[in-house]
Length: 452
Image (cartoon, rainbow, N blue to C red; front, side, top):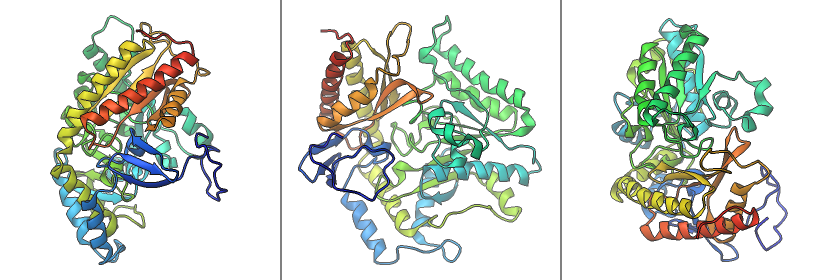
């Protein structure tokens, strides 16, 4: 525990025994605890609070909707906020993805994508197609359906007997490879692994391939070589397989484009969204799909899926206001510009700390990875828990960052830095300064080299 005060007894079931101080209020990119400490949210919570805290426009929109109704069940009524938000999102989607299905979070959004893909296969006379190929490592959610396409033994191991794990291909961690290939050749190599897996499984049994265009929790801001994306699309087209982009973390302007995949124009067939849509104001997620996939399902009798709070009017009113603030404040452009600043700051840290083996990301979705040897990319042993230590040291100094191990969840310490998209150049400099101080102390504790 990092709080100096003894926490009050709690009836909450926290996921670990770690206790944190009680938050009192939040505004912009900062949060304050009851004892008066200020924290910079350098991770946007779990990379969710895209427009920052306490936005008055969003709060006013929520108040107005609350005075009308906070709930209307989708099988009983349509509601205007859901209609308006669906229209707004459809206008931001690539290609023909103009049908929106609302849910309450990222795991639900991913499961909705998977279930739609399966129902589409049945409705189009392809009942043998049920396999969804995923990547290893990857993270797509915590429910059993989402875990079935999650390549992370630390999260899936306890539940393997309760679900049907799907086939996987290696994630495109080309930065670790030590071969004679160019990065573009490596991208093609990783994409071709998908075709090999499809052929091994039997193309007639595979319905979809799911991937994060820019990595999230399991790969910490992983960006594949440019060649990867176009080849993946070609392979999916060749075998009639749907391409699902999980944009739960990389979407909604986070990377300097509305969707992470927009950087490569790689035409997904289905997209999952969450986190940034509600921006921490409400639980909200969505699936975007084209009518060419939706129509056969409706013709067969309808989508056998749904949730109580799907299309909730209060949540959708908040989401619509969030979209408006992204436009009004120019946050897509700011994410790109401040992302360039942040990557420059992180590369400067890499020069100081040679055990930072990689700096990566796009926009305000970035990460650093700690290694034993930056030449061979040999990983630090698990017992050198430097990622957690850097997180704790930063937290003690008022900075929140995101820590996760990217080698199956058991090795490969990374720290993700992903502040709200309203961050200024000064904010980025302050984040980098505190992070540098935390890494300096950790380096001394673990006897790791420091330049200068």
